[in-house]
Length: 376
Picture (tube, rainbow, N blue to C red):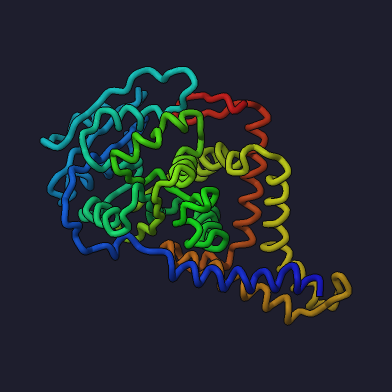
């Protein structure tokens, strides 16, 4: 009974919630009805040391078929060939900017985005990362979605391009945590500001709403600036929507396993606001729900009781429910469904990266894109 109540029943509920949430998770690609008004859009790109990504991003931005568009790219004091690559593109809609020095008390990306916002002239501010690639209709679809929902801001989770073993294990797993643990009704409601998944890879604001809520200046010290913006928008009463960008925008966050470890370990501990008890609880919880069912099943097959039980059929049912939940989420986000079979390894990888994130917090510093930030 203990294992049923703590594993089988929770997985049944998680499975049902994942499948229901997937039905409620709207896709950006479905907002094809054009907005009656085509406001000017400022497409804003902060770029630091992006010589590998800009040759893919820039042609996709210049191919946007939206009729009223400006594209601003800010070179945030890059130390590679970013500037020369940017100068190789020419378009009357394109404006290149050189970022100023990083002010005291700011992190790099919020500072770059705030500069872009002030230099823009559009009614809609559409921020994107330099490691994305856009479908030609992406800008129009974002405008349509903003209009349809009468939203102040819309964030879209792009289709993630997976490179390397760790990326295949961890990125679909993180997306599962959104679909399985956060009800879409609460995400899209202002009454629940702490239900705030977001992606800075594609985040649009109405200009008036952006400056009214304070923009990136309010999250200038945050590592998770996208999630903090979503939280503050909802807390201040603005209408925020979270959409699935599958088929519209792709993002290749990392190029190898080491980049995955460095990237995620800088912010995992920040998700729990640098609190050790919730951090330990999450790690133990993931081990219990993802790894222990396998241990339970193997021991039960050999008749070894756990808490007085050796029911391998119930253990197998628990594993099946786990696979149904993760497979449905992986399919929704465009990841290979077969990766669901490796989800216990994904949980162990999450725990490994989480431990590394805690260790870096204890050290007090993290380095990203050539800059070192104090975490305390």
